[in-house]
Image 1 (cartoon, rainbow, N blue to C red):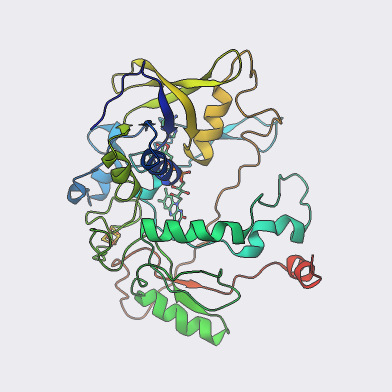
Image 2 (cartoon, rainbow, N blue to C red):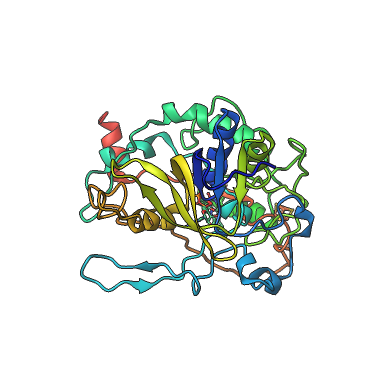
Length: 368
Ligand SMILES: Cc1cc2nc3c(=O)[nH]c(=O)nc-3n(C[C@H](O)[C@H](O)[C@H](O)COP(=O)(O)OP(=O)(O)OC[C@H]3O[C@@H](n4cnc5c(N)ncnc54)[C@H](O)[C@@H]3O)c2cc1C
Ligand code: SF4
């Protein structure tokens, strides 16, 4: 595998190797660029996935703390506040912290956004105190890229002909995973309420695909690495392709603390701590920052210079603001018969009847 000297100016440094970083590394390397990927986490079981641990305690607390698959909110705290006047408090947020980032341990639900969600602000109107805005691209512009990603990554699902399902130019490459008992029960109950249940769309393959095995329904899924490479993580899809080009070097245990710029404001590379906690400067013509929704803004704010005293890309002062987390609501129930829910992937079914708010619907009906 190629190894660049830190003093060699590579075309790109990619910070983070997760969903975004893995794709960037692969696209840039196959386009002929020299790439160094800097990932703070360890390699996990990259290349020997059968060794992923299914012991809950060892998975959470491996002998070497740096080998945790997810970040440690104690060692790597993220702090949050609702406005400039509040004192920031530690949060408990965790994210994937290993080669492949969150995609190594995630549940894999991989739904497309609906077309109206791209210009929701136009339909919903302003919401005070937020940075609510339309996306600068439309669903129609994104559609070919959704298709490309689904086929390259390996997504299972069923294309459904419904206004509540994003229109697709091509079906999913592999059929949906089997619905679990909970999905079957949900379907019966939802039908009574007039709701539609469909199989989940997941970055987990239900059939052998591109040399990888199908899911065996082991049940130790979200939070664990997949031992048969069925979860289509960056580590088993994008990164091996990037490495095989011979132009992409992956450096794990490499924690970036600053993106450097010269006096003209042009990026010169990235400063990071290596596995031995030595500070290293990797020279590069450009940097791709793909360290996730928490760490990317943090790194921009840490990258202060005489030219950019408030951090990089922060001329408008909004970096690190308007963070929106994904919300989860859960409910538990007791059933008369065992459902064997420990088997299979986390989410086997979904209700398709998510609809725009009344405000948004009225606006769309008026043709806005
Ligand atoms: C348990 C779990 C379940 C999830 N389930 C789903 C799901 O079902 N569907 C879904 O769509 N999403 C899910 N997610 C969220 C999903 O994993 C993330 O949205 C996605 O991985 C984000 O991609 P990313 O490339 O922005 O960042 P990540 O995948 O988080 O990758 C960022 C990488 O950057 C590295 N990094 C950060 N800071 C630095 C630094 N300073 N120097 C070097 N490297 C750094 C991190 O270690 C990480 O590997 C889940 C997440 C978790 C943790
Ligand atoms: S349930 Fe399937 S995708 Fe999840 S870890 Fe087990 S084999 Fe892999």
